[in-house]
Length: 346
Ligand SMILES: NC(=O)c1ccc[n+]([C@@H]2O[C@H](COP(=O)([O-])OP(=O)(O)OC[C@H]3O[C@@H](n4cnc5c(N)ncnc54)[C@H](OP(=O)(O)O)[C@@H]3O)[C@@H](O)[C@H]2O)c1
Image (cartoon, rainbow, N blue to C red; front, side, top):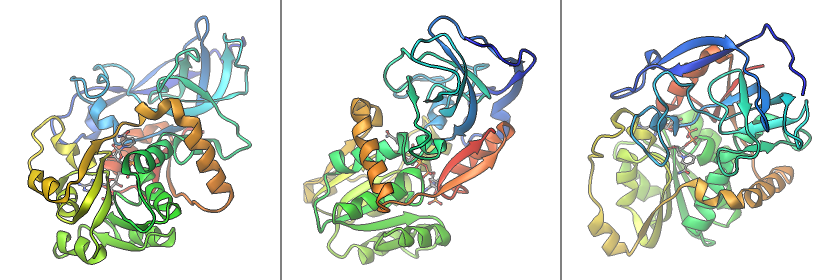
């Protein structure tokens, strides 16, 4: 199997506290351990890139969300991609590239390729795209944008699609896929440079939710025929403003609640739209990408083809070093990332 570098340590981040409100750097503790040995049927992978994603806020909680939280003192949960350095699995050899959402915030990870589903391990073809793409447009965020928009939002040519957190990992793809589906795409984000990027990749209109004098009026101006598909990544006041502008028969895709990071687990106080749903006969659908995991390769093939044909572009935001994982994650919650936030471990 090969067991390199006996004296190398595994630097990692453990969850130290469950935040009551917005997470802070003190919620994690830096830790150093010997590099673990893979057991029977397992592989040892050296991380090259780690992902940070808004769902991690949910894991910093003792209660179950759609999956259970990380225990205090355990390695913080997260995805990553890297090179296999030892293998006790017949289908994996040293030098293969492995991507998994079971990586954790650490430099070395023991993974079990025979686990299926979202916690499993995917072999990455480094010739297809830079391997870090498997954490972004050619991975979980790409699959989210693809099925969340096409299967749940069901956009039709000529319709108007509004996307919140539009310059982020999921949002920038939703806008571009909406254009490929023949729709008008409207971006909502909190920064003019991010909105300029959204325009550059094809969004037809862009709204800065932080500077718009009256957000619902700005959405109305950008969507004079109403909003046919609302792909909501944020919840909060942005959600409220778009809900006031739904067209008859609109579809609302509830994808994420990043605006509620400071109120996680607390009542989601805001306007109530039951009457609006009746008036517009709109539907609101909670979406979880893992329900589409068995069709993951279908989305990835299509995204890869679009990228090869120059039909989609993608922005990443890179930090360097395992030490910066908490900082990278907090950037997402404070809107400081510009594109998919990833960390190069090297
Ligand atoms: N349901 C699923 O299966 C699934 C899968 C993947 C992701 N998601 C969700 O999709 C959403 C986007 O994820 P992502 O990975 O693409 O993250 P992202 O958009 O790259 O990063 C998060 C962005 O959220 C925006 N934001 C932060 N606080 C906000 C606030 N108070 N109000 C409005 N916007 C705020 C920030 O952009 P601005 O500068 O524009 O504020 C920030 O850059 C998240 O909610 C995530 O949980 C869901």
